[in-house]
Length: 385
Image (cartoon, one colour):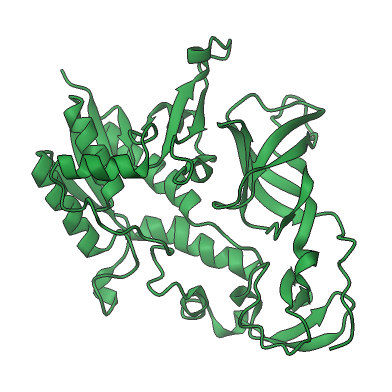
């Protein structure tokens, strides 16, 4: 009997080609698209840039072309709870969220994985550019543990978004594209006769159609939660007014409405005092920060310090760093907070974003940036306008 695999199909070239590759490899493949939005409440069926009704129809046509069953799971409530509500609440806390990470963990590798088990599927596959291995493959004594490696195409590698997957989820995940480049995938899609072979990639957040997250948040929270306040320099000088802290993020320059002799950027979001703190660009360069809720693909360090390359944004080139575990209060508890010090200062280390640790191409762990610690020696700006 063929092994049954569920493939999450977004209607794009990547997941479509992944489905075709699995079918070609002899698996019993079932295509699933997740409907994550109530399109009846929107003016257009093409709300967002992926998982729209048009994309679902593209996925259905691909499934018909390669000859696999196809179903749509309505997950609007689950998506709102696990992704949209999280996205909004993080901005209200003065943090900058990455909604793709909880979407992968909670929907694709939790809800969808549970559904797959109910229909007799052993694994869930996606179109991510990443690779999964077990420690047993390398002769490691921890052979029952799994870890992720970067995809072969370094320009498309998406391992960063997957750091939070548990060992049970990794055991049942499959990434058919990890050993290929994007150009190879498009060529394969053409060879399979898929009409999505040249389909453009989505670049924005899928549930925000015009990439205007400020309007999205404003339309979904009570007005009293959006309070105007002062924009100040690091020495306390008031230089303007902000429209509400959820509308800003670390490193932002445009839209501040400030007149100054040199460009100013958001360097800190002070939720307690409802202030937006700005500084010159050099002040955004920091070295030291705390990462919490770390998920380890290797054994968590019990004490001491180790070296790793740390990536603080999806497109950030991972940089060399020193990582020190922060001891927990109870004995036998896995350490889930660390202190990270980059060898060289990095721009805009942002609370709410993920920090992911690598040993070469191997993802060894990752967590959420809680706060920066060091004071940049150039953190003060001139009072002259």
